[in-house]
Length: 448
Ligand SMILES: *[C@@H]1O[C@H](CO)[C@@H](O)[C@H](O)[C@H]1NC(C)=O
Ligand SMILES: *[C@@H]1O[C@H](CO)[C@@H](O)[C@H](O)[C@H]1NC(C)=O
Ligand SMILES: *[C@@H]1O[C@H](CO)[C@@H](O)[C@H](O)[C@H]1NC(C)=O
Ligand SMILES: *[C@@H]1O[C@H](CO)[C@@H](O)[C@H](O)[C@H]1NC(C)=O
Ligand SMILES: *[C@@H]1O[C@H](CO)[C@@H](O)[C@H](O)[C@H]1NC(C)=O
Image (cartoon, rainbow, N blue to C red; front, side):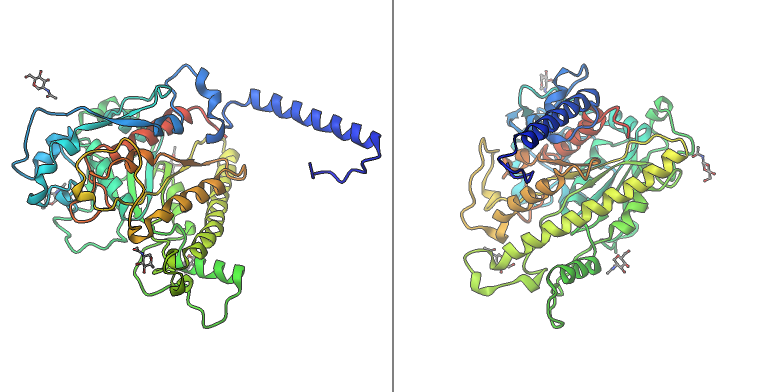
């Protein structure tokens, strides 16, 4: 025990410090038993006694895919059938519609009905709210909407949400009218003014059906912008002036200084309650080319350096995000408002090698054979991000290690690659389902 410089011969000092330690433990115990809302993922065990349904992230994450078709349809005869197979009525977003549903390539239609016929069955100690688009909308209106930040995988998540909430939402932009889109464009879901749900909702004061988004996606590959990362790298490593951290590979990113104000914007422009972030896939030695080391051909080309830098960057990110939340919170406290805004980080995912030749979910993870795109490193990025966020300094940022369902679905990828995930196979719908449960049940009643 190295925390007190005690002279081992001084019994008095030892007794006094023992007493102090016992007092501290007692105080901690009293504190933790009284404040049941100050939890983080590591002490979810305290929720087993909650009356309402409860499912800690690890109980959701440990489960299996079980066969349960949504329809009696037996074969795909048109792209649109993907919706019926998935048990969906439609999707509000119209961007790359059949690419997202993965039914854009006729040669792969044989994947249905199987690919859309499995549902995730979490562990027995998971008592999760049933997925229900209408109930989600009610929570998004009354408790705050979702701001999604991430790369193209998260964009897929946005599309999937636009299907879960269909037909009660409308999506912008309309890509039929604006086909020359830019990836930096925000994508939004708003209440559909003709939805019958509206009469059942308690709209907050100043909520605008037309202008207040329920869900927004912003393309943010690295969670910090280029300037911030270059500056952080300089501060940490003091590289020579000729050093270039980034290659000219394209990426999209924003600073927390840009998106935290968006997240915290008051009604009527915004009403977000949950920020959902995910990053991993763009932290490569091709984008962060300064780390590339061709002599390490068999061990990731210098990716360890990227990983170490990622730790520092995510620490900075969490600090900046928590600071923005704290500043906002103290303003609101002064104005007599309560709030419950929170940030969740969804574990990132590698793809699956040779995915189009695998036609069933797995029951256990198979180690990759070839390490396509250095995907084997993603788990280290996740582990490190989780470790950073487990610090008590970030009480409103929650890491959700809920990647197992996706890891067990090599069959559920887009038609053209083995990284992107199709809407309708249950994978991304499961992210929405669990995140919704987590913020509306596991974090319910949490007020700072
Ligand atoms: C399949 O058809 C049977 C018999 O018509 C019906 O009872 C069942 O609900 C159908 N299943 C689905 C998933 O639609
Ligand atoms: C997008 O615009 C097209 C053309 O004006 C229109 O037909 C379509 O209904 C719009 N889509 C949505 C989802 O509003
Ligand atoms: C509603 O919006 C107006 C103008 O934007 C603002 O002055 C007012 O304080 C808002 N009221 C509430 C309850 O947020
Ligand atoms: C990154 O964000 C900072 C802070 O808002 C800003 O000063 C800087 O110009 C941004 N850099 C880029 C490349 O957008
Ligand atoms: C691993 O990443 C490096 C740098 O991005 C790349 O050159 C290499 O091809 C990747 N390895 C594999 C097996 O994809």
